[in-house]
Amino acid sequence: MATSAPGLFITLEGGDGSGKSTQSRLLTDWLTETGRTVVHSREPGGTDLGMELREIILHRRGYIAPRAEALLYAADRAHNIATKVRPAIERGEIVIQDRYLDSSVAYQGAGRVLDATEIRDISLWAAEGLIPDLTVLLDLSAEDGRARIAATRDTYDRLEAEKNEFHERVREGFLALAAAEPERFLVLSATDSIESIAAAIQNRVVGLLT
Image 1 (cartoon, rainbow, N blue to C red):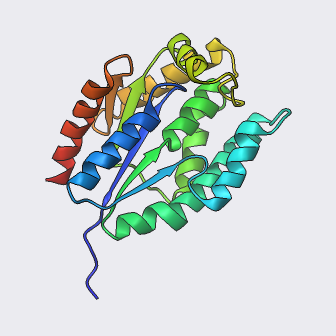
Image 2: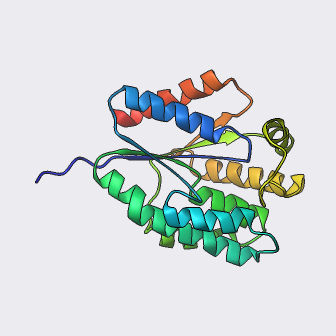
């Protein structure tokens, strides 16, 4: 039986409140309208096991050691890639995912002040070396991100509840990653209109489809 050509793996990154879920949905809708088969995932929580890990990582009360937190994310990533993402890519489908290994490097590396290289190595090992074809980084200040979250709900998860200093380190971590791999990243200001951001993403994705 013939197999389809390899698909695409597109990730969306950025701080809390930057609009990743909105843009992920818009990109999914646009690609589906063009006749593409799209699989959506997220980290943590892209699988049934991931949902259990997500509850621990983001909503468990009490302290979680930074290294333990990093390893929980890696466990979620390993299962998600092995059971959902890689099979979809091998079927020739397009996977759009909210957060991936760059979030681990930014949050656990820069945010928690762990060694960024070690976090990346653990993440790549968990994912068996899978790198996205495109990573969209929606850049937003910590203050603006917190204001957006507060406008829609009155509770925060464990990471959202961290101080602005933490989230600014995360932002700088993301920007450093984008600067190091400009060919993979598309950096957009999350303060631009939803429509202009979506158009910029689509324009970049068209180049990957040809």
